[in-house]
Length: 294
Length: 272
Image (cartoon, rainbow over all chains, first blue to last red):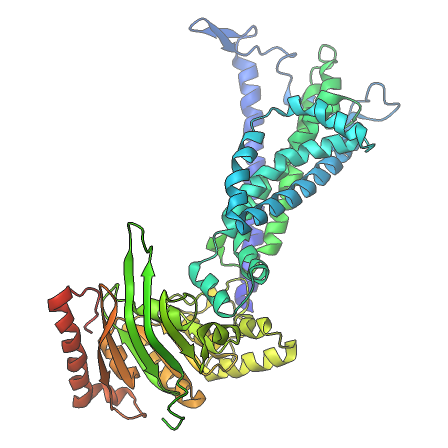
């Protein structure tokens, strides 16, 4: 159908436009950084007695090109590898744990949402505790998770995946729960008139109508899973991913002030990759839906 | 009509429906309602908002259980009739699944009955031809107009060839032109498939044009107050709408409803 083809063309066009805007925004941020560095006070400044104007020296605000050049420098203590090669290895390590945590969190989140939809009593009893669980700082949980992991004889990376799952299941539970209840009353009556059972209705009606609601939750969970892994790496040690790199590089801040930013960029890129995976699945799953549903 | 008098398509005896019984918001939606619908008969339920006409339809569909009384469909208890998919249903909102193609929407009831793929596809095509949209099967519902969506909803309701069709203001959201067109289409479809119809509506001309019998209901509590036979014959077309007899029947229904208005303060009746 020509209408569908032209719409896909339009979608591709929109994607290019969005990417261009994103690059333009990044460029603007870099320009703003450099402009402030050029005209700002070298030793920072005070406003109403508060020291909030940042210093512009090379240690606090290295040049953008120095940060980028950092990726091409030899990495200290990693043989003859360059920083970008080392970071790529770290990023891949972190990404795998984040993916595992995200998948685990999504599975738990969806199962919980189904249970709460099926049994109101579970929803009433469980939901407040799930909300409370999210107020616990991740750093406070990390040691406990390690102890449990050790007692179960699981490999070390599972601690990071578990904490990533802990952060990512919640938005998925909430959005799926909301979505599963979004099926229109007349559609539920229709399924009822066909004498369709609860599970049949779940898969033929409730899940498909939940999908548009689930996607924002999945997006939040995707980036949260990266945060979960990085925080675990920083807290526990022993896991050599991007979180480890931020700590490692920050110790070299006097000799190579730009290297910290290299690790930060790597972490941001990971978050974007996870986010991008969800966006790509969304495009795939929602390709036959009307535009306003997304 | 020709059927034995003891097996009605729908038979309701002494049905009452009370919501929130014993609670503060107690509502007597229906009080001691009797209704019998013969096979292949077209019966409309009309009345002010809150008269329980949609509730009555849902009792027939077994989407609600009456608090008292007995509902039989096709000679069986209503629940058994629902489990056997003895009826199809269409609502004011077409309720098509936007993630399915039009053909897959029509196939939904057949899928749930466990029909195989080939048989489902054949039947879907047959239904698409019945509602005069033979080449729309691969479209998505949201690519169709409101009237076309409603036709697909009717095709879905009739896909398993149920003997009974239950409709809750199916044309309520359509414009007047489309609405009249759809009414004529519906009569043709029912004649072709010999389907019994129970039809809830707010519109007097719609009820008169479509029905063999118009059942007038009143609110607070919901009751049947009048039944008007519409002897306009079976072959009705747009000319029927111009006939004097058609207007007489409209007046008759209107007066039956106006009687209610004086006594109960009827709301929500379309006089067009």
